[in-house]
Length: 161
Image (cartoon, rainbow, N blue to C red; front, side, top):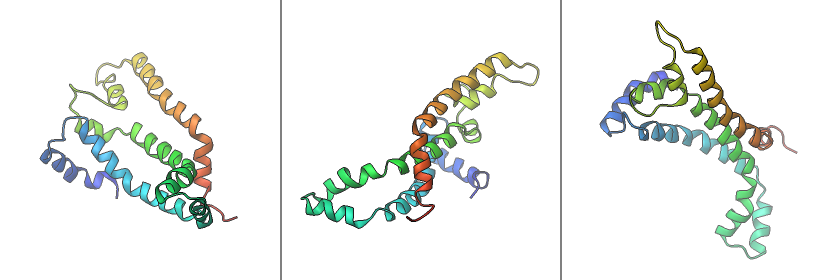
């Protein structure tokens, strides 16, 4: 469902719960929006892990908790990296929701702050360009660091081998 379709009821709910106008509002919306995609991604990834690995851990004396944290969880690295890159870049580059939810005199996202440098009669392109580069650097660093895991996570369900 596109965000534009449900944004007005969402903003009414944010006002009802007192989350409109502070940073907690976008955080709650982003987390709740990521849960469905994360559930689908992790479920499909976990189905691809053979049960033999978990059975071998149980034979070696691991409890259910140890089996998950010592055997299964390390195998979820590519899936977690895919979630971080896909959701993180989407949230980092979102403009509409923070622009509407957060008032102009309080904390802003980087895109909304850059938008304030360009007005109807003036434009501070030097500051806007510097802000764009500063906003790009953290996303680029995270993507470069997680790139190999991201590719593994995307390709994990592509072919059975």
